[in-house]
Length: 291
View 1 (cartoon, rainbow, N blue to C red):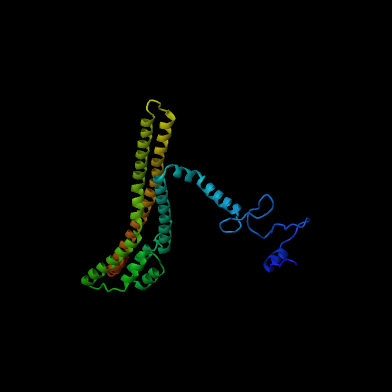
View 2 (tube, one colour):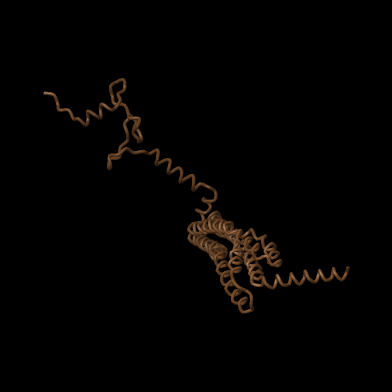
């Protein structure tokens, strides 16, 4: 009596290609590592094919990443080195974030102040407002809002000045966002590097004490250069962070000065137009007298 045929096994045999000697050839579509006899390596616990190639590729990627000169030095510095590396990454991201923010706010485009002063001196408030409306600088937005305020009397000018100053402080606070983090990175990174150096020196001298009279100079020199490595990394992080912080402070200070100039002109636009009229009348009188 013939043995019963398993339908699933028959279907699998039908789908598997055969070699010249009648054996089942390894499936080309199967993902896994082949044994020496041509069969697919299977995990005994799960029964699934084992793909050692993917594991090897992922391991080689991690090894190549850690083999980079910078990351290798950071890894040798230990936990302090990784903390300093994280601080450097945060500072770099913050710098580009602030740079994009400055560009979007038009902080560097502040060449409109003289044109605004010329329009206000000539009494053309409409042209001055149109010029301010086309600019993205924080001073332009504050000046445009100040153009809607009445400055006919001294009391109104004082109230308008207080309101514009409050808006200018909010703009400056928005520009200053993130500067404390950059300042903290610039101050703390050399201190962390010095801490790592002290900890490394302590460890090196402990090894010397444990060696007793059989002191190997290579042990001391190796411990010292590894200890000094954290100080070097801390300085590498602190110097650019300090430079970026000073540069951003200068940009914000210039923007604040432009805001102050525009606010002063907007609040005293009536007096500017009056002085320009008096100056023009005096010039006309002098010309008439000369004739």
